[in-house]
Figure 1: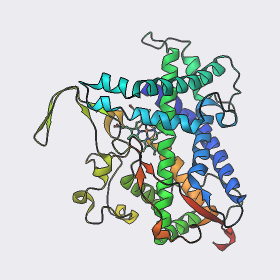
Figure 2 (figure 1 turned 180 degrees about the horizontal axis):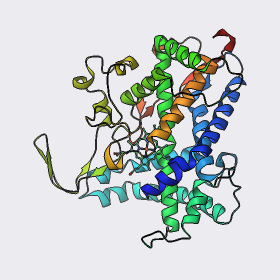
Figure 3 (figure 1 turned 120 degrees about the horizontal axis):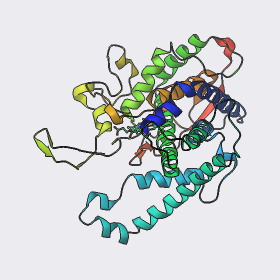
Figure 4 (figure 1 turned 180 degrees about the vertical axis):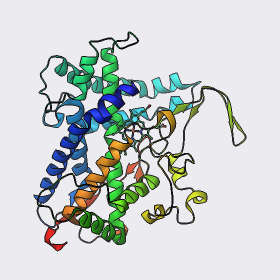
Length: 378
Ligand code: HEM
């Protein structure tokens, strides 16, 4: 299943449609920001949600289901509820009592309702593709078209994808791909806004590397080294999945003198790893992208200094794709606009409280005022 996701959704086969859709979504984001009345703060959570959802939906499903709400709760509510459920129940923490706790606390019925909504949503998408009522995205098939096609043929080992397999893969994309990306871009913009020094340095790099352009575009971020450090520093301090996903140990091992027996649920505290003063020094809690200038630290690298995408065989398969999405989005919002905090607020007072569990998001939405930047200046 992982191989299918990587080769059919995240790999080079889909690179050209990914680039085309990313450019379209970014153009539409910049355009919508340009149309905002002057001096009015915009909710950047909503702006980035529209962009990321548009990108994921068009690539995966061939169209943005935003324009055509299906029955049941809104998309955002449905995904929020799913993330809450995926975080696990009280019963998961007390397995010997779990079944009773979850039944009597109402958790089981909440879970059933949530998954019935999600299942109905995904079922509609698969049915529309099976009945060929979704137009093709340019010459390429979207991901669900490809999956439906794969489910008609046996693979080399004689296995044929079932409808449940197809639905599970779509669920992975929805639950793994949308919230995490939006949350990280919002954290990045919040940290950048709080630090005028970082904002100024980053905007000069983006604008100097790009030069003067007339139209919104993906922007070539390959040479934007400071931008890459800013994204890395954001993921170090704010890994959107602070405890990764729950893992289960296969065999007995000892860690720090403690026995970990087979079938133990293991949670890895990526949040604490990224802030450990032993690794990151006294300013571990400070947003300071320059720390990566002389530091060879890779995401999930051998020494595990920071693991926002996990590590090893079950690490996030979308890492490279998602880094491009984040870099392009941030580069564009900072190329085309200067950003100010709402009237009466100081940059350093921006609220940085976290909330959530499986995904740790900024508690309050990020409101900023966009000021269109005149490109002649640079
Ligand atoms: C900023 C964005 C993202 C972050 C920080 C992130 C982080 C993670 C983490 C921490 C894991 C679990 C790794 C572990 O437990 O060892 C994971 C797994 C996964 N992610 Fe992501 N992710 C992001 C975006 C995406 C996107 C865009 C997709 C798909 C379109 C995606 C698909 C997946 C899948 C399918 C898995 C499960 C892999 C497996 O079990 O083998 N992620 N991700």
